[in-house]
Length: 416
Image 1 (cartoon, rainbow, N blue to C red):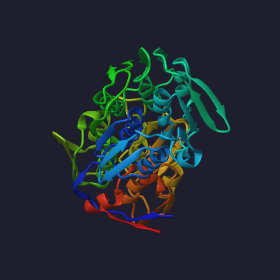
Image 2 (image 1 turned 90 degrees about the vertical axis):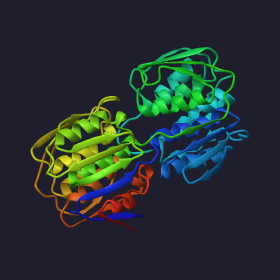
Image 3 (image 1 turned 60 degrees about the vertical axis):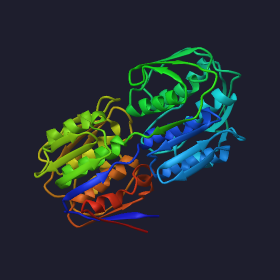
């Protein structure tokens, strides 16, 4: 099992290219199941979750050719309509094959998914939506078994905003008979990126990016080319790291327009930020000020950035309050931050962080993907050596993070 060893105290300076977004790439890879023709993708990140999804699609019969960040997928000869448990137990996004399989082939057998242990993320929204479209669904022995001759367009209201639920049902609706309207739909940029890819394939979708998405089903989709959007969470993670450690960094191939809340909070912390096209420059020459935040669905502050900001707040001037409203178990990184000397009190879904002048290096353990990034940021500013264990979580969502941080001047190395 790999670990990261970090010698804290170095400022971050230089340029880093932002990779394609994991949370856009995963559903878009699944969209290849919707057509016999080839789907050509560019800017696909090299991540463990992407590799797992690729293997899952290949074992169904999808032919995949890859060269760097370019991937060509052909689902002309699908011979297995199943996503088995051993393929999906580490990745909840595997549920995203359910909608495409049912709408194109009329059947799917999909294991209930696994993933990060950050709280309840039920798949009942996916199931109820497909049932409303006419699918017959049974859950047996840990598997979702769905059948439908042809899905029917209908109105679906999400009682909770769900990104994967919105994506799954949007993909199911593109080949359904009639019009499907998704209300209280997720507005995340990754949902918009999927919609743009589907439209390039011939789908008829209106309203992506709003809370009401209308999909008019078509008989079939065709091949297309699409470039995966930049990863806004990777962008935010590097910006928070430079704000905590100090320095002058420039992100390239980034998008500031989908980072409004993150950039606003970093400005509040004292960072100087300049945006020019696809570049974001951040300068930080002081100890950060503590910032309060409350997570909520997009376009509010993202839950996937909560842990990173908490790491910054542990060594900031003042006291910060962090309220987590999305996942009930997303403070698991707190006990590890405390091992570094952080002063954090938890009451329900609220964390109160009193900034301290200096964290001390220690051996700590990652509990989920974003907690891993949080602990790396803490290690960058802690005195002495910090060893982050169980970084397989980190490899699920960050492409070559230690190489990118090393190029910025961080003293960080991977070891077994």
